Image (cartoon, rainbow, N blue to C red):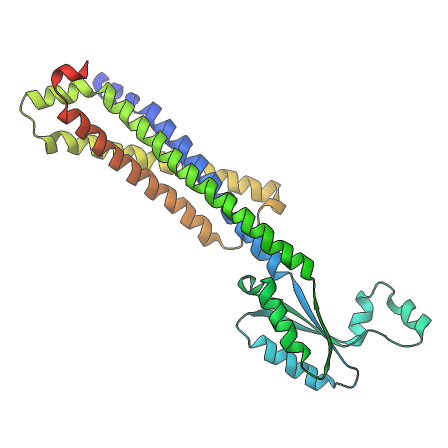
Length: 283
């Protein structure tokens, strides 16, 4: 019985090492998902405004709105009448009284799916819409869109680089933890081999134990990350931008798969090393 517990306890350092590495990797994955969600949210809040001449009827404006809404790249197109425009105009009704007329034109505010919000795409659409004789002007915040493109590209390169570095470090650290565990059991492995045990007989339980350790570590890391995400959502809701919980589910599932895959392969290669060594090389 004491041997059973000693064997399980010997895996605790490996368990916590793998859990810590997977937790950090999952945390980076969460930040990447959150950054992507934030980028989508910013892009989908970009407005392209169409201002119509006063001689264009409301029916024609609504036809233009309905046509825009059928486009696959449009998320929402909203008609804003002259009267509604006054309500959001900084000078409001007082400005209308002062001028003696309502200067606010009928308009349509268009929001796009995030993938379409690229400076060149919006510029091309703006030029096409301006050819409509009923449209007085088409506007969108060109500086904001241009800066989004620039910063998103830079942030994407940084996040991908961090993810690759974290992946390499995670694999290296988990592999190191498994190899340290195998090193501590090298004499037991060689003893089994000397009494006639086949390589597959020796490999099977060790690889199985490694996979189980990796799975348990990944489950523990996933639970910790889930608790942290829940805490962030409850206490710092402005930092939680993810609107698709399937993405979080995929992240947690990826942690489980990664934990099992890395520990299984690391155990296989580590034990093969000691199966090939001669007895004198173990010292």
